[in-house]
Amino acid sequence: MSSASLAPEPATTSLEGYVGFDTITQQIEKKLLKRGFHYNVMVVGQSGLGKSTLVNTIFASHLIESKARLAADEPPRQTTEIQTVSHLIEENGVRLRLNIVDTPGYGDQMNNEGCWEPIIKYIKDQHSAYLRKELTAQRDRYIQDSRVHCCLFFINPTGHAARLKPIDIVVLKKLSEVVNVVPVIAKSDSLTIEERKIFKQRIKAELVYHNIKLYPYESDEDDEQEQALNESIRELLPFAIVGSERTVTIDGHAFRGRKNRYGVVNVENEEHCEFIHLRNFLTRTHLQDLIETTAQIHYEAFRAKQLLAIKESSHPSNASSATNSSTSSPQTQGPASAAATPQDGFSNSPATQASTGMGSPAQSNTSVPAFG
Image 1 (spheres, rainbow, N blue to C red):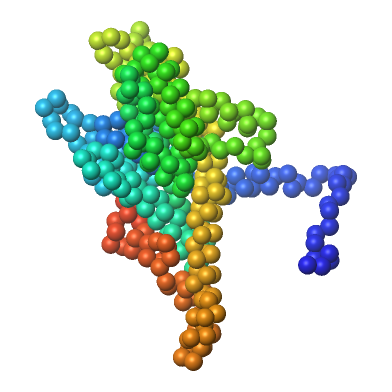
Image 2 (image 1 turned 120 degrees about the horizontal axis):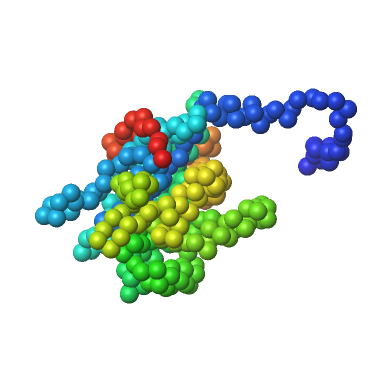
């Protein structure tokens, strides 16, 4: 590459008057507000850990139906297949297309071999569907983003056992390779403060021992303030949370909480649980970073792998080319024909087929007013 093709080093120049390009941030904001935003959250964990309830509590709306029993003699209800619901929520003029991916409770069966595979496959299918839309000749101006931005991993509050199950470790490793994983200790009010502290310490030690990388990741691009914020989040992982859609009134003060014969748990009281830290993390401080990290790290790794596979399939070995030279022209081997060949779930991805029921994140589309 010649030196003439390189951009010269810019010189810092002072302005002699007001130009107005500082309004570009306002112009961007106006366009983004008009377009709206996408946020896709997946919940993973065993049945009965309150996954649906926590999502409804975080977004202060009834977004997904709880599978909890309504009566003591009622048989347990479970999510038997991956279900995705889509809601349009609005807050102070900001419209958010929220997709919630509810997964079957893994580890519920006698034989749990490969029980995580449908979850991993769904995540990769969303990457595949997005890549297909990117590679079309006449692609949409704005590609609808169904890629999973955050995966809430629910840990059973086992108390005295105080450790991750072997299947938890396997699933966490698999998930952390393809999505931003945020672990939470479900129903932490079932533990005493001391039990919770010991439980968190042991969980952290196991995560380090097994080299499981969780979000937020370390980055040289973060400034000191961002690094300090991320470090405070890592100290809290896994979040000890309690979810509740019920409103409890004590001394004239109404709040969301759980009431039993021993007392009341206020889900937004930092002394009772860490729900408020989790909510602020997912919505107020790291929402955009979760979306960007998905695109720049997880999707980019998937995209690079798929494009490399296409490139390799479009340039067969010399021996193979020599064998076929008498029957075919070199021009018959190209990216177009390679793209039609299945590559690691890309070309034959169920996300691109209408018969799978898993490709589209918008299986229901309702407008829900946020409250809180």
